[in-house]
Length: 276
Image 1: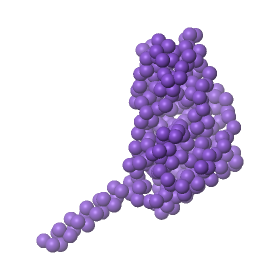
Image 2 (image 1 turned 45 degrees about the horizontal axis):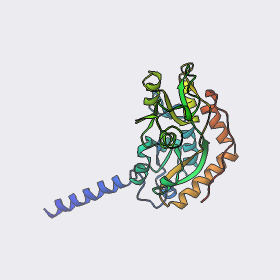
Image 3 (image 1 turned 60 degrees about the vertical axis):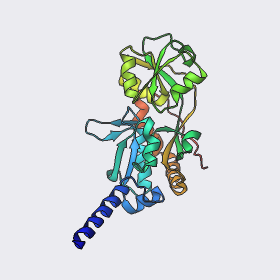
Image 4 (image 1 turned 45 degrees about the vertical axis):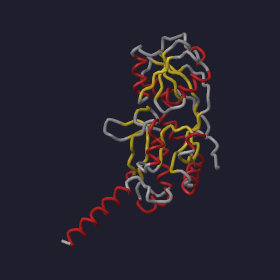
């Protein structure tokens, strides 16, 4: 009887240990997780052409994916040992805090509010907020023309609120779970425009050539960072070092051109890292 009870206790401990290790929260830093497990779970978008897109075979492609692979390799983890986990804008902080992912590379704008919950390395890209509209729409020329219009963005993102606060008080805001859902509704005529960062919108415009267009009037600065556990200063430094090398050895430009170049998006220079 005693043996059976003891076995049950060990079984519970084993299951608990396995569960805690699934997202890397048993390690003080992502550096330790990568070094010891040789595996990482990375949160990415799954519906953004050119940035983070799930392909028909179930793998992921895009610029964010290439950045994630480069950083992971610098930490000692090969691409085959990365588990990519789909995130949406509303759950990125929660996934990091709960240990469901080790880091997030998902067009993740660095903001003061988000810094209260997670740490950021980067930025690895600087975008600007813009509008995606139907190709035959000549009336929408910028955020100030949105009064009375139906605007779409995603829950948990900052762009739509910025429009409503700073530009168009009378805009009708519709929030969807994903940007691709917004794209469908703009294409269908139920909504007038989608707002988010220009590089994301360029991918959708390229995906629907002749049907959608980017207005081309950026009205914000969005610094994309790599999110990781709050106060992981060791991890932030290691990731910044990896990004610095990616910028300098040409890998960053090559990955961006291969992922986004076909959309016609103007290729920028690599950004300045924030080593706070």
